[in-house]
Amino acid sequence: MKKLSGILLFALALALVLPSCGKYEEGPSLSCRSKKARLVNEWKIDKYYENAIDITATFTSYEPNLLMNIKEDGTIVNTYSDPSGVPVSWASTWEFNSDKSGVVITTGGVSSTFDILRLKNDELWLKQSISTLGITTIKEIHYITN
Image (cartoon, rainbow, N blue to C red):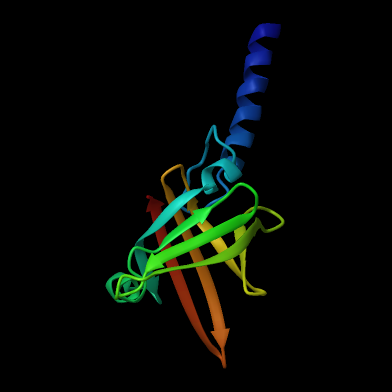
């Protein structure tokens, strides 16, 4: 009887804990790798949406082959080749927000906060809402590993 009650108690605890593991709207609900280990990677844009409209082709025409190399030390190196083939790069820093539901990226002293929708080993989905003069623009960027 003790064994059965122990198993039931364990199952109940597991049922309460597992749903809370999924911090991100689009998953995954459980991962063996830490959030930081999944975020640290070299990412390229797969899809770029602005107000739910796919503008990937337009965005990537301005910054073709854009790569975002997120490093463990809290830095980011962004690179792309301009339309004439000249390499362009700039540095940023990153950190998780307080509850790790988003990431704060700072470039040139300006910080931008992105909600993390999906964070997998090979996928990163970020969402940002920007309000200017009463108009809200919602950007959603889907990255895949390079």
